[in-house]
Length: 308
Image 1 (cartoon, helix red, strand yellow):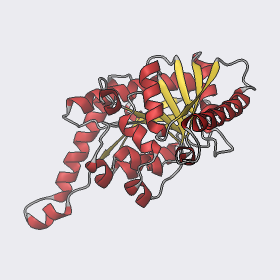
Image 2 (tube, one colour):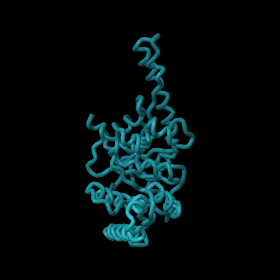
Image 3 (cartoon, rainbow, N blue to C red):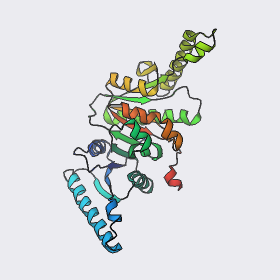
Image 4 (cartoon, rainbow, N blue to C red):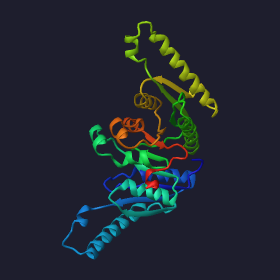
């Protein structure tokens, strides 16, 4: 994301505050990007109105769309100095409408307001947020209700010791995109890397195992690898935070301590049963953070919607 030319801002008609639109306007002013205020509508009752003919149901659907279009145009009307247009689509799966529009019209960035989801709901009912995290090929910026102050902090979450080529490439993508946003937001960049604690079962099962020595070795490896990665982008060791623990614990903790306005994190777009049962680190982090989150896919990622 060396530039931002086209932004799609997802509008939630059930919310009074349109955080996605506000953040889109802020970024558009700094980057010169155009904005599409995007909204999906769907009412299952119109499909079930068997007393009406197909033409009558279509007329009702068009009436609903026109009403929402007028509401949306009124919402964006105060921003005359921004290149902003509106789009309303009738679709029963908002994430599909968003991703298809992103793919067909080649948007650079999706911005969507988000809120916490209960753990049980996230497992049984996959919200639009998680579908976008897993399947949207374009970076998705999830925004919460907070400002981006000048001279603030942006945190890039990396896995510096991964031996997976895709993960290594994603690390660099994360840092590059974070640096670009730092320039737009006049912010300072920091890196965070979590490393695992010593497995308790190994210490119990193998008497000669030295957990202290093992822990120091793992820590040293992560520190050296993270600092080496940072140096490739002219970042200092003081800008690197390497801490023990799970990413979903470490990243929010470091972000809170630094009062970060944004965390940039990568996701490989896991889908299917493993995603539903095991979850995704990005998803856990999003729900744990009190700041904005930019979720990135690896270069060359192809959305399953594009393949279907």
